[in-house]
Length: 371
Ligand SMILES: [Zn+2]
Image 1 (tube, helix red, strand yellow):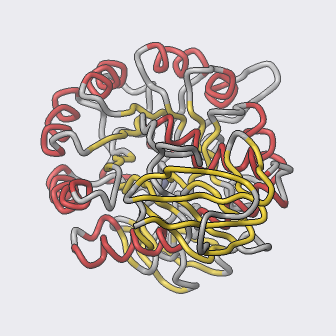
Image 2 (image 1 turned 180 degrees about the vertical axis):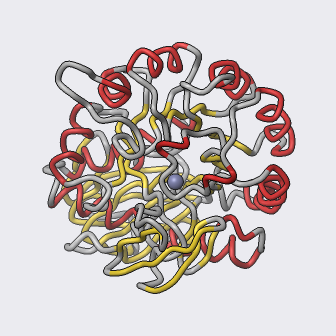
């Protein structure tokens, strides 16, 4: 059974093809062409590869920390409806037993392909840059504890964010990378040299670059400058216009071209509207789409969805659609080691987002199935 999608333009990181079509068989793209499509086609304005989100805590009113199967499925479905076809489920800092319970609840969703993997954001992070993480749950990166939690995940924990300046962090990074997960630098007070040492130890991701770390100064590059300049590092960028202003999104994505990755860092309110929510054990108030801790007002994740991150990158941060596709799909897929997705080429998994002329999602094809 073959499925044909046709559009005014087919766009991926390699560029735009006008008046083109994509033919899918089973779960794979088997043919791409221009002009008259072969047989009956589903029409859209624009076709792009499915979005890949390295960093996401929830959506649709549901959170990945809940350890409730219906909530986990609902959060993933909310992002899928907005074009995300590959995602990490991110867990904020928590006590050991809580983390173990949350990881175990997510494992079946990694095994059935709903999630690409689990992302532990903390608890081994800086107290001074903990953002919306519960300070009571933070601790030093004891390599034995890191290894124990990775064992609980049985290979499904695919990314761990920690602060490299903490004692035990560099040994922990080596353990994380040895087990096949990505080590990410974030929620950190590190200086530039410490950030570079972390990359030398194997870290390859900057967790929401600029946010929750010391700033870039012209005589002191700090972690931001070092991570932005190092070709080994994928830089996460929260493109919601709140965490970073649009000029900084443009700067970060152009300076890290090819390895800048749009992420949502979404919490449960994404796709669910304003109101009262929680992130981990902390109360969050969402007003006008901005999520802040009730106590202290720190930003508490975003309410971003990947299609809106894409529109903002194009309209406000001066990205071409191809550049935005690189940041929304290809760069994060490469960071995850997923060479079967992120592009619209023959042989790739059939992850296709059909968009209208305003870049709003019309339909989402994931592994050849309509989401
Ligand atoms: Zn986060």
